[in-house]
Image (cartoon, rainbow, N blue to C red):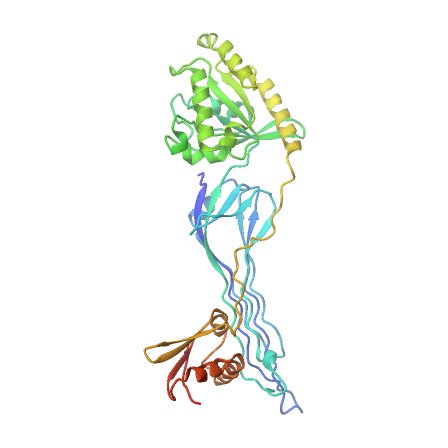
Length: 427
C-alpha cells in the first residue's frame, strides 16, 4: 500500500537523575560525597533509507519515545545514556511542524542521519554540589525532561522523470514496457490510483527512475480528480514526459489536452510549467492519429520542446524516447549543485533567562515569585528533600528574592510561593 502522509509524535528521552551517595571505605570514617550524574536521555534521529518508498510503517505506529538516561551511581559514576532512537524514512520525506505547518526538514540525501530532538540532560549528583562550606551535600538534581514534538511527514517521490497527462493516455503502459514495474492497466479512466516507480536501464551504469503519476484533469490544482493528492510527486522530477493520446480515442483533442495539463501545472506551481518537457504523442500507430501528429509536432516546436511519436503498446519509438530522456537527465544532473546534507534540525530556542530575572506579584494576599529561568531551575530540584530546600533558600537570598520582598514591605507571616515551594515570610 502506498502511504504518502503521516502524523507522528516524537519525544526524546528524559535525563537520568543525579544521586546522593557518600564514600564508605575502610579507614575513611567521614568519606565525602560521591553521587554521580544521571545519564543523558536518548536522542531522536531521522535516517533516510533508500530501500523505503512509502510512509506505510507510520500507519500502525505513531508515537516514538526514546529511552531515558539511567540514574547516576556511587563513586562519582555517571548513569548510562539512553539509547538513541532512529526513525527510518524514504528519500523525499518532508517534515513539518504539526502546529504551524512550517517545513522543518527536507530529507532527500539517502543515508543521511539527522538529529531531530536531543535527549534531556542528566541531573547532577551530590558530588557536584560540594563546596568549602558545604562539604556533605545530601541532595542531587533531577534529570531534564526530553523535548517533544508532533510532526507531519509528507512524501514527495524522488524520480528523475515524471509521466504527466490525462487519464487513459498510456502512461502506465509506457512504464510497464520500459521497466520492471507492473502498474494496473485497463481501458478506463483513473486506472492508476497511486504513483508507480520504475527504473529504466539503458545500458550498464546508465539508468534513471521514471514515475507514473495518476492522470490529471482540468481543475487538478484545486483537488479535482486525484490532482492535489499527486501533483506534489512531480515537484522533484528533473524532466517531464507529457503524454497525449494522438488518436483522441476518448473524443478529446490532444492539442487541447496539452494546453489544459500545462495550465494545471502552472496553477499548482509556476516552476513546474517551466520544467523541461518532451511532448510524447502515444497511440501514433492508430489511423486516427495521423491527422493530429503534424499539429502536435508543430506545437512542440513552437514551445521549444522535443517531440516523439510512439506506440507504447507496440514499443514503436519507445527506445529512442528513453535514450533521449536518459541523456537529458544526465545533462540536467550535471548542471545541478550538490545536494546539501543536513546534520541537525535547529528548532527555534529561547535563550535561558537568568535566575535574577524574576517578578513578585500579590494574589489574594499571597506573594508569588515567578521567572522563566527560576521555573526551569526548580523543575530539576526535589523539594521534598530538606537539604534541597536549604540549598534553594540560600540561592533565593543570593539572587535577591528576600531583599525584594523586604523592599515591598510585605507583612510577617505572609505566604510566599516559589514554584512548588511555599513558606511563611519572616524578617
